[in-house]
Length: 107
Image (cartoon, rainbow, N blue to C red):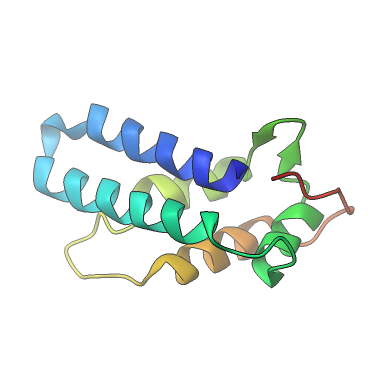
């Protein structure tokens, strides 16, 4: 699934930029990998995935949640205080893009 691939890539990016704060980076990467596994198990008709689709995040074989969604993913669970779980990340991405013109969901 494209969203899971995106989240795994963001986890890799976070680990590659870990030198400033490796503990936070590891926590963020682990949360993103957990979310990737969670998203891979979602049904194609999941509400948040549908919202991401409507928001135009699926372009060919790429999932692109836009700059706001990218920022949400890259900073997920980076703060000292725990944030939320994988479902909350998917919902935050969906909220970030809003619902725009409809696109077909590609998994």
